[in-house]
Image (cartoon, rainbow, N blue to C red; front, side, top):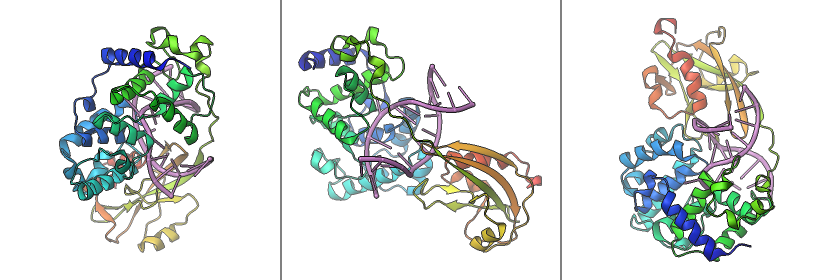
Length: 345
DNA sequence: TAGACGTGGGC
DNA sequence: TGCCCAAGTCT
């Protein structure tokens, strides 16, 4: 085990001298700090920056976001992924508005009850915004700690993460928020997964894995499950009023996002006509195809244009399609016909 | 507890 | 190119 007080001071000094200027480090508003942490979940800093800037401009306060239209929020979140994050965040913020007079609770016990607040976000917001002495254990911190302690346990297990959290908290410095960020910053810029910069690491003298020349063996890596593959036909159902049929997704995956009708490749046209209660022309050759890779599955999509003279509430004017929140997977498909001249549709 | 849940950067 | 992985949480 390494000497914590010395380690803490060394790491904090390094952080203060080297920290990157990030937009969410310019604010002390707990709402904005919280928003940034929600966005940063499983998402790289470079990706988050433009989204964060857009959100704090458009939704300047907790109340503004609490009272926003959910579909507008989804549209602004479009492309960031894990769409439940923003829905849960709005839910949580609405609860803060009602129960806590729009003030983010500085009491950890209350804050942790809010939707979308887990061990990481809870610790991060409470320490950074309120300087409460909680650890914020993310992937960076787990990698750093596994190497420092030469800890071969499975870092993906919640029980191990809890233990790491306690290990950090038992010698937490007064500057808890800065210390948490220092640990993460170290992982993001020095103690990186593939090519760690041990030579310039400020805490290399404390690293057991480095002493054993085994840095790359930590953290322990588990082999990943193969992604399941799905094959879909995606239909551009067009009527004679320049409208297209779009479906609001209600399943967990991409919930709340709009999509083109998507069916297993063996689904008959008749059953699709029945489902939407419309009559369809026979599809011609596919207009194109796309593969989309998710964390846990792969979609292979082939697009077909079909026509109808029917109309119902699911038909949207073609010019309005891009105003609706849509996953990147579906945007790829929509782009197949957005370049086709109107005369050919 | 393990699997579901998005997308893009970077090698 | 394909694969790993990124400031995790929910069920």
